[in-house]
Length: 506
Image 1 (tube, helix red, strand yellow):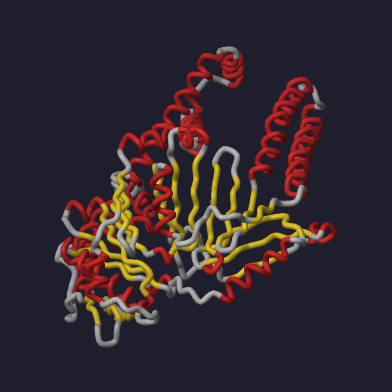
Image 2 (tube, rainbow, N blue to C red):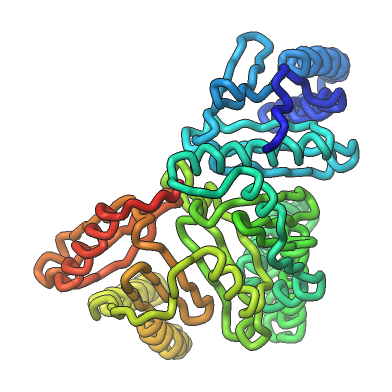
């Protein structure tokens, strides 16, 4: 049995004052940066003088506030009432008391600043609202890990008191420390993920940013630039030079790849997974190092993502959506890219006691799903033709016809093959949704973990007897569109599984 430590109110490390000061300063700058910029670029010397004079005053006030916030910030573990207690506040006092059985997750996080001053941050996620979550920013490594271990043990102990078990506490504690397997994603693997991931978003962001900068520069130097006629001649000469255009696009494309690789490496640097008998531990991050440990029962949705290139390289991304107080899949999501199929199978075997490969019933959306997309594409093309007719009297009809033909040849087959990938599978214990042509997604939910099912019928579905279905879990909701009336029988079965299950998952 773990020792009953941290019974007396305890403060953070003294270096926590520095963290509080920087955090407060950052919030202040984010809120008032336009006024600060205007003050410094103002033509009035008096305004600039008082602006510079205000800086040290605000700095001193920030240090005083940080000190009192640090002094009033205390925490302890109330073993008698089975609660973790946090008290804080400068101008008003606040006391947060979290029962052990309401604790969902205990995470360790380290930003760059926290690593520089050699402290750890501790986050406690609860089954209540976001206001009940606890963030402690400055702890020694030994203390942070000890508190996380104690709270995780007390949460498990509280949960296990509700279950019948003949194991004694000492055996459970010793078994928890036993490591089953460990896997680390190498830097080379992260680079491969960045190279094979969709970088269209990065390309568009850089393109828009470059265009915005160009427009700003052009407007600023408009008085020094050539006349409109000279510009027209210039553009006529440049328009025939495809080499410059191709070079520019290639440069932006290459830059977007580098940005994507950098984003992947920074976010998932030194990613490692470790399975213990009761927990799956995940640690990663260069800018913010995060360590998460969760039990299989807390998982609500497992999403597996890959694409054809990554599949050939045996690269899969697992996303874990954990129990959360809000119906938001992004609130408690853990992303782990670069897993091989063998590691993925180990993760599944830890998370699920039942076999995922058992025979199941497969259901696809009605053809209305793809017909509506065809209609929307057609309406979009028709709108372009009408605008072209009104503005240019179809003078460029040949070019417009070629573009229309290319769009139809690309989008129509894409939508068809995308529709063919959508499949919902129901077995005795699982609901699995597969979809995606390039980015292939598989979402897995255990039936007994569903909190409910919503059925919606837009007025354009009524004549065909179709419905949009949303499956609700404590980790968020998943949707399937254009499902037929026959599927309602399967919904009744799922509702029966939800209501009749006595398994605990919180």
